[in-house]
Image (cartoon, rainbow, N blue to C red; front, top):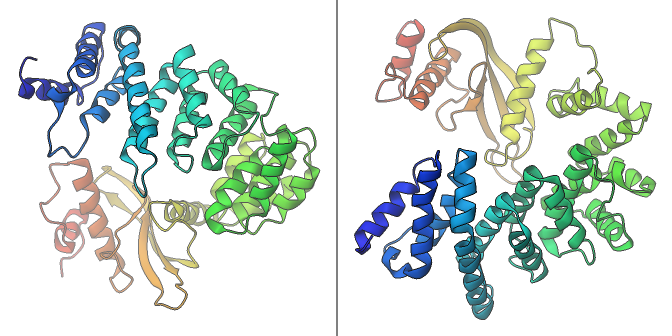
Length: 418
């Protein structure tokens, strides 16, 4: 690694492979140490991804315990020093308007600290929340959820350290989610929001009328079973305009034995817009969803699956205003090489002051909607044909044609080609 090119090539290589042995981890650790001593060897004015981010990413590469142990012993001390130096630079320059790449890099390191833990890494997380570092960044949720998933004791230590005073902005929401996880999944009885200030913050989440903040109310509702007195909050949550918040509150009440809350969850399990979440809550409680006539169940399940997909933040982010079955049939599906039931659903989103947005999605194999391609003016056979080709292409199947066309898909499905 005496030349700039070789150092960069080494980094590119180890950034793309699993570290499945101590020796592999040792090679990656040498890069981290070398980067600390000679960062200029890894720099290029045309970089799209910063070499610092790639160096940090190496700590996510271990797939074997001995590799993680080696990386912790031989490279984590360098990462701690790199983080401290970057943090000093960030504090000197001050937060940047818009996308703050330096803060993003620092939060990425905090995620690694959450994964590797230890006294010094955990203290860096606590200190960063106190500064606060990028308090409006959703990356804080990733940092603290990684900590909760890694080790109960470490997460409890951080939650306790941040309880008084509670951190500001989205860091508080991420802390609330972590505390809820610790209480629900690990039986931790001390909740950092079960204080006067914490309850005040929960009340503000539950009464915030901004739809962009309804997820905060959802998190507040999830905390209700773990507070010493939550009657006031149950009332607010059960009357919240967002059905997800009301369902979370009903789960919390049902957890405490409220029969009416159980009935509400079972009613929601009959509605395709809420079925998936309601069934998840009821299953967690050891209860059954409301009975549905056997002949109606497949349609209900399929429509619920389509709605859940449309609700993803990367899609529409909410349930459609209208959805109906466009087609249902049983056919041989080439991507899965079996016969199965497949469904097409036509959906519509009303746009205030504009044209509604319509489309058709498929359920039965990979739930998906080919926006702009699968439209309601096409016959069902053409839409199945497009989905069949798309799915084969996604899998890299040798049967996939180079171009996604209706004609090629019809051939694969055995439909008549127009």
